Image (cartoon, rainbow, N blue to C red; front, side, top):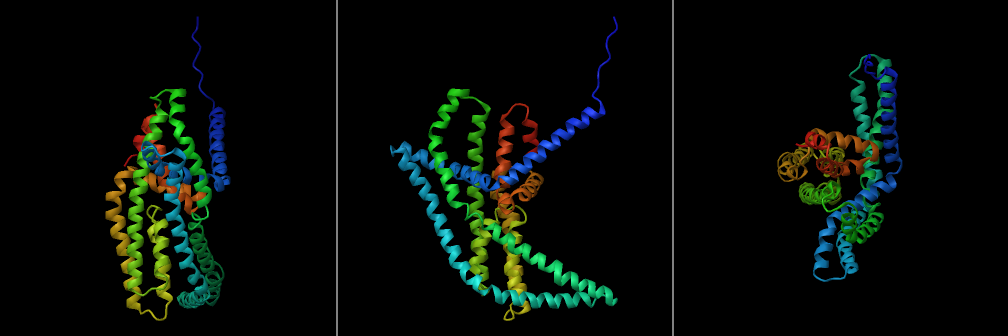
Length: 351
């Protein structure tokens, strides 16, 4: 009896499966992008519930009623948030009134830059084309993009109340979740271990990163105030959330005050250079020494994974995606490390 030859997948079959998987990935990315108004507050609520759950558990152990314990924990998060919103509104209002003046100054600087670039070319036709491109397209788009980025970076405040609403319900359900999950799947299920490890790692990262971001914001504010830069408190406040964006967040936060001193006629070239050097020194020391020393050990992710996740979630969710990229990837790494068969992925993601 002849043994049948093994059947290998045909080219069309492999191409079909590959196309189906790529289509599923694209469809999943579209859903993540389309549902971001709900998913971003939901992810923030999960982080908030993870951060406040130890407080709720500690209060319950002291025989405080669960409802009152949850209310106390949510209030502990709400009061600093309301204070942050108040400070932001108070510092942003004068800046908004001064925007027309700064816009005129930026326009003058753009005109001078355009004339300088044009005179580098001898061909009159090329000069006209370069001037048109810089004045009408490139520079206005860069300015609009910077304004849009700064506005979208502050949308965290807009998600605040929906996030607190989700977090309150998660804390209410969290009291019974472990008992129900243990009853359904057993006390040693990998997912239960993953959830506990995710809570520990994410809490450690958020606490460490918040302290470093607060230190950065304080140093930026003190430096700009000492150099008599307009709206120093606002730029320090903006530096706090942007510092959560890996690699580029501190640089983005430094650009607006640098542009401000460059277009200020009352600031000398030496003063503008001092502000620029001071900002880069602050961000350089904190970003290259303090942050890796205290935050890096909590993240335990490869720098390449951090950068790629920042790009991916930034494309999907904008600045908020960049801020949430590291906690999401920490969670993915922990889940992979506890699920049989996915351990190699967790190992590849480690620093």
